[in-house]
Image (cartoon, rainbow, N blue to C red; front, side, top):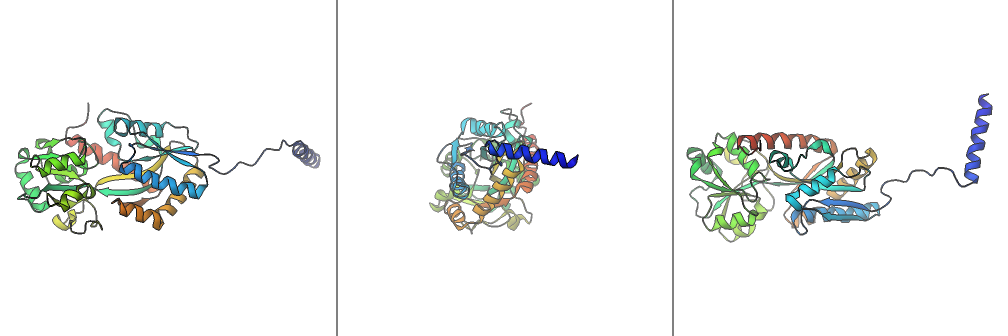
Length: 326
């Protein structure tokens, strides 16, 4: 009976092949162009890094990887469209600090909506003062702010609740500063805050060192610290938090690649492997360094764990700052 069944099955397969109806083997992803959503306008840092990745992904997979800029609502639109895309591997995106969206009541975006693939970038926050400041070190600034927090105006380097002021606020809270008494000043970007700092309208500004580079070199801004474990190669004279107060404290902006929840494992594996190849390439490293972008690699599992840390840290600091929308 088993023999008759096998003969019948073989005959059926032969008939299908003869008729040209045999099911084709599934082709490897990607079979067609892939969209890379960048939740930022063209010309900015996120756009630049996304295009660097897209170029090499196209070379590796022999399919177009098309950057789609969606920076509306401060990145809410782009992150939402990455999270809600069809999970077939043909819509992926660059994600960056997003936890504040939910806390500010802008959009209910969280890590469970994504399939994290890999982190490739980290730019540490910095803390800057005007060149004529009496506070020449982070230790000096912390002591003064702690003694009289309401005296100081600190520029957020953009909208308050972002990549720069949240980690700096975390450091201040860790050092016992009453951050609710500080006057945090939002702006339309780091450049605006830094210009105001140089003009004497602010006491300090949270921003990255590359954003302050022109004013530092012009002798108008004094960088006090960089919030990374090690000094930045492009700014070797700016000391870290640990060097100044003996305690490690890291924070800043980061970027990674993700897809919607439910992305097929084979897509995640293929992309993770390709992104690591790109990350290790001289072409990518040279391009990132030339533009002042920091490098940080986290594969899928580690990036997934990091997003949990990002959400918990942001919630803790924004709650302490009384910034969470009820």
